[in-house]
Length: 314
Image (cartoon, rainbow, N blue to C red; front, side):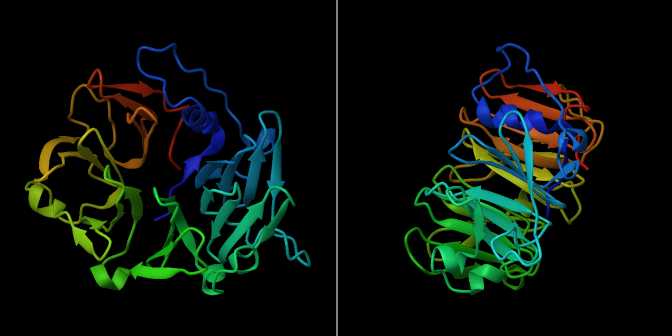
């Protein structure tokens, strides 16, 4: 499932990426707003990445945007130019170990090479099978071995090992009987994928479900799992309609709390949670549909909130 964020509140995420060690005891965050008035091709963004040069990149439904701290440079597909962007709807971004930017679109994958300021097909730049060129990527994830994982719209999850000219399909929607929706690494570094009702962990041989459905007694299916994150021995599961489910991991999965509009001290006015990000201190940033941005500091066990005009889902 595609994530979307109104880029009027874009600099909220820039601050998170550049200064992730901020906590609730630090000085208040200063947010700046960037929109089409400052050069963005759309006020909606699907993903964000940073390349080694320091540039911030924003995926939008109308091209790719590069921000150097002062100006925004748009990149679009141009007829007759084979090394332009492969499609204007950009859904996923990832910077690899060579400093190149992987760009996922519904029409396939292209890779931006900063040294040439050009886009290449994976089969051109890295000699990967041509199948990689056509994958409709909605999410990229890089694990500790530098394997790049590619979540697609209809073909499941692929893995592309570092320095190997191969890709492999690992799991499909048909294997689980429902669509794959998101990916993340657990605290052991294992790749995990979510379906609508569960999270599945890859042990190197196969994916095993955590059995989340069994631990949630009072909620009727489906759970509509949207995003999830592992941190501090916990698993946080964000739902499209049912708030946040917080579990303790380990030998046995245990539900700690179900965070909804009725949960104090959270100030949710709606149970739709759009996205979650673990920062370098392993604390959590959570984006909601109506309530802006929440920051959960595990040292205080308290959420801080940032207003709706800073970050809103679209």
